[in-house]
Image (cartoon, rainbow, N blue to C red; front, side):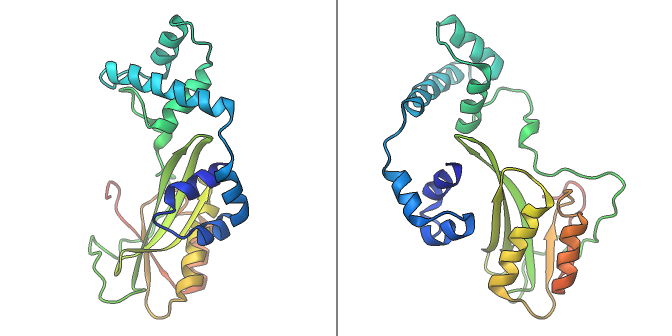
Length: 223
């Protein structure tokens, strides 16, 4: 399961119990999965990935899915193009073509965004005064997952996070809910983000207003 692989990759940064609870899986199930020997297909995927990485390295990181797929077929390797794409994505390999799939900021034309209340000053004087939220994508053996985080800019600590296989507004709302539940903020608090469609959604803005949190967005092009 992709969530188990994420837990194994992040166990040095977060407790296993916490990640299992947030992802809705059992700790015993994770440990049982971890002890399970890899399947024959997984072993073949490992060998294929090694061969693909070698081809990609020899091409000076220029070969994309199509060229790798054709070269494998010429070598007599029976593999589908979708499988090559999945293995390359999981290994973080791509050609010179711009990877549109990795985009996490999708703007909605004509939608009014919030004002920038931060103006690049990310140094609050106390906790729960300025939170920042963003979305990143995580490549796994089973495809791409999207991770939304909420960071307290005072301590630089992640106070809320959520993961889904899609980038619906619920992704950022779930991360916000975790932050609100764990921190129970009071007083003036600003939540800053980019202008992605998830953050300009009615669902996210309504939850901020219900919690008494001011919404802020950076100008277009700001990191």
